[in-house]
Length: 126
Image (cartoon, rainbow, N blue to C red; front, side, top):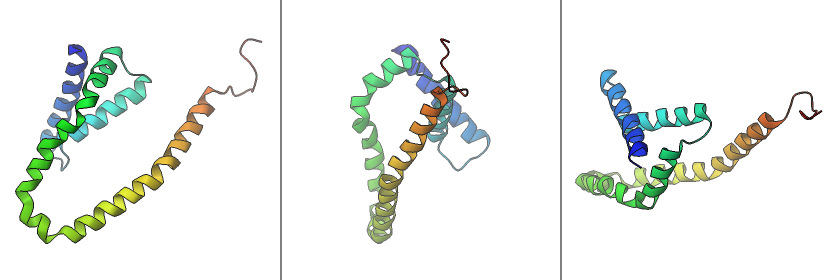
């Protein structure tokens, strides 16, 4: 489990480094998550230590969100002033996500199934 945790922290630190070096307007953790996604995409599977660690951490995801929610309360006055804009933005983004996720999943599933087919339509056992 320690090896998987080190992999996760390594990607986060790499993202933080890239964000700081290039003065990007994105948090380093988001860049690190994108790098981890690209790594997993290129590798084609999840390494066992990373799988074990992520499975163990998954039930605790709500605990990771608490600091962000508490931090947002520091902007309570701004939230009260801009509640309508926030409500509209959250509603539109949620509806868009719900609408697009199945479509993206269908495209990815069709691409995956097409990768498994042989170009000549034959069987490799012949």
